[in-house]
Image (cartoon, rainbow, N blue to C red; front, side):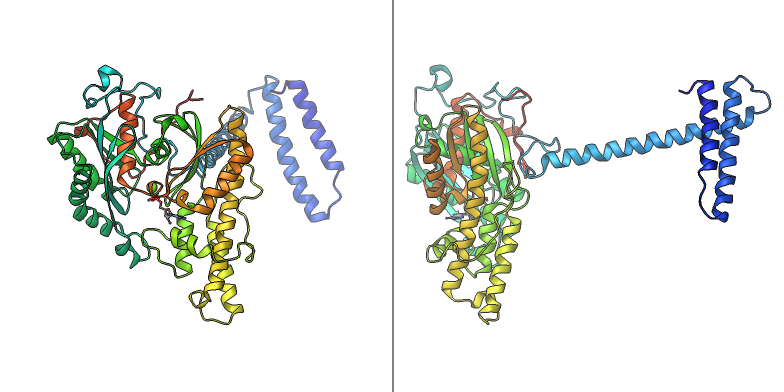
Length: 493
Ligand code: ADP
Ligand code: MG
């Protein structure tokens, strides 16, 4: 705050320098003079007050002070609004690319180990003997998966042997529509669920009485589809009084890399998850404990494969990836110039929306060059070149982000990688990422191709992993989650 003498001298200084500084035309001088007079009068009034003279000028001084206060209050309010805007922008940017699986506080989180991440509770019990004997006996789990467009069931033994499995694909239904129609998917799940469960049991030559536990995918996924599998599993677990486990679909994908031999992929490890719904890099610290270190800003790689396959007129029911991969084998991967996404961005996030547009424009340009009416009329050779160039660019993007994540993980002594999710079935992707790992002396584990895409065994195996550490859920309390972010634990690393 100004002292009285300083204040008066400042007032004087304003008057003198401003008046002598005028060089503008007459009209403007007079208006500025009158403004100056007004400023000086107010200023002098304030000076009187400060000097203790509060008789005649009290009203003016009060009104001037209250105007100042209002101005200040407005300024403070404005600043508050600005701070609020900045805080919410910062919060948004923190979650960019992590939209589908990050704990932003707005969805229930997957938290099997409680708020600390490691206190597991067997809410519906454990298979007989494993709680008391420490897991000596082999046990069997029936798993059910219905998160999207495939109805899957499998009976898996706790040593990872798949005793029986059944999968009802909805490819023929969605092929007609060029994508998944949730209502049709739900109806197909309802029609298939009983048959699929019975087939898996029959193939395993086991009855429901003999099954030790039941696992079912409860999220994330299409809610109406998840519900079909979940209700069936709750009904069976209740009727046959079996331990029950609600499975996180992404964790199930990740854990499939351990089904053949958990010793070959021990926690902590890095996981690259690329499927139709997700594209993420995760630090995997233990069951239920995952830290997302990179995610897609827009589309997933699987979605990008599917859209590109559709653009080229390939079959897309059940995912366009396999058809596009097959066609790409015939093409030249460097013929069509495409931009590598996020080339200059130094983080582990992904973006495939730009590549999707890029390949469409390149295809349309080629159609004009070849003088054909649409992309669908291009020759097989041209389509193969487009497919190969797309796949090459998509994988270069994966390689770049992965290498950055590996560098980060090496600082924490992590040197194992799991490549999982539907797109991990792609042979070109598998061999290129394998080369990256060999070069860096990393251990890479990828499930067999048929276990990369959605199926019942993933629910069974994820349940086995949960049961082995003493964790199960209460079926009477179980619901499904379209969004089901991993919990973030403050002191996880
Ligand atoms: P979701 O994303 O519903 O969990 P999946 O995990 O089964 O489903 O992944 C399906 C995705 O994987 C689809 O987008 C499909 O095109 C893609 N995909 C499957 N096989 C391949 C392949 N060989 N090459 C590329 N993408 C593939
Ligand atoms: Mg999946």
